[in-house]
Image (cartoon, rainbow, N blue to C red; front, side, top):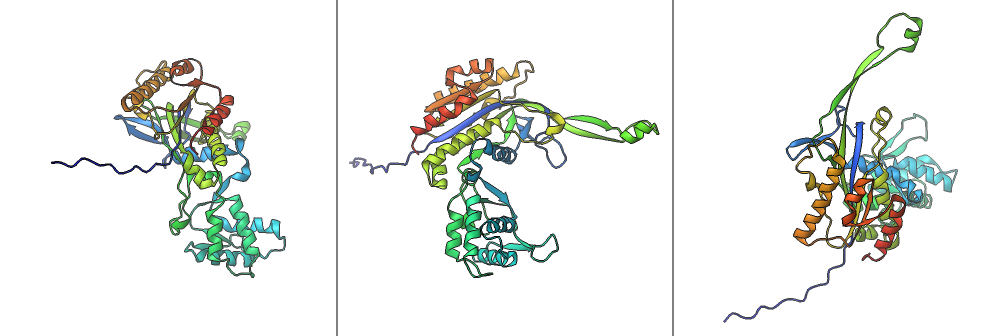
Length: 385
């Protein structure tokens, strides 16, 4: 006789809260993110070439937009020039600080954790050499200040303890470090797992780059009437597309990185706001492609993040009314995924321009950009973090 099945007591899993941001964003002729040949970046998806804007490019744009929505003191810097930043902070504390001693102590301190810093002297003057990392790394402003203070409190040229260095670099992370993470290949103990993910934006239709042939006239030669024709000629590649953009934030992961749930909620609101208004600046002066998303859908979820990019696996071929068709595709995909998997957002907020807002009205609460922050903050107050 088969014994009855028994079940083990289930461990209660900690609640997870995810904030998904979806946007349709149309760009006129532009080249906001180019490859090594100067062409707009692209990708094959659904069997056709699409315009692509890399996640790295848009993450930097988001970081550059952060000061509009969050106190700059809560942000960090990504740099190799650690020595210069520490020296600047040290001078504020002790104007008579000896730079040579400070850089020697900084290099010795980081050597203890196998993080190699090189002494670089670009000015060729005594006392102007600075310690630099071999790779870009994120540091919060508070971490830089604490490094400067610690180095000033030890004997000139001597390192701070390994334990103290660990404590400095493992605490008081900035919002951008907490969101985007930090990876140090040589010293993984200082790595920070990113609490956000940002997808490569892709066009919802086929997108082939075009070439702009241009000429420039030499004003002096033209005024003197010495010769006719161009002083130089060249070409610039560009394209125009409606992009699908997606990102997600893990609220509890962000709270863990920042060490504070309230700060995590504030940072999440700032991230969403910066995601909406940011745009990479490649060739901005040439094309003036200053547009905003025409549809933004923000979903607070307690199940898992969900991208709806597959709504556009079959490329949109219509050229007139393409934005509205893209909005209808996106809304249909959200509904179909929810019906098939039973996944549904706890709360959905929608910003829509004109008829696109009407298309998406059935899936969430309509709002404006000015009202989005308050409504999202309210939604996060009832979440798990």
